[in-house]
Length: 189
Image (cartoon, rainbow, N blue to C red; front, side):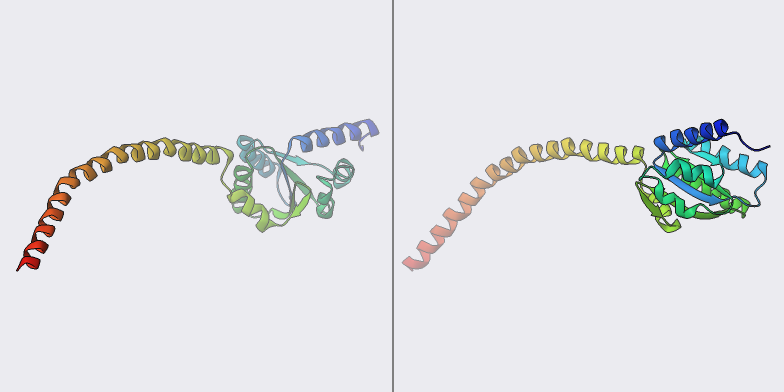
């Protein structure tokens, strides 16, 4: 027995809701995967906040056709597809999928969509290799934290170099007087 119209509309609304929260959508071929393997993929994605949605291409097409941000996904809608909808941890989700793919050796990458652009596998991997939000925040905090340290070292160095300069004045003055005296002796002789 097929889906009713109301059921299809509910599925489409659910897909639209998931897409509204997602930053990246990855389309993968799941032909040949068992229920246990799909469950394994979902379990790997769960900690990253990503969702693995298996639905008919027609329903996904209806869900994305009016949304310019996700419309490029239509070029990947053929065959048996699963949709990885990634909310926050893009790098973690892509790495989780890659780990699953190595273990299962059955899934095939079809394409990705982010900010209205269709992406190939290399582009999705490049995005995944970028530092996470937390890593960037740590790098910025480290850079900000180093500024007061460098400022303190610089401020401390000013009196130190001034002191060294003041200490050098008497000996420089003594050398200058000695040089003048030697010059006068040479001129007198």
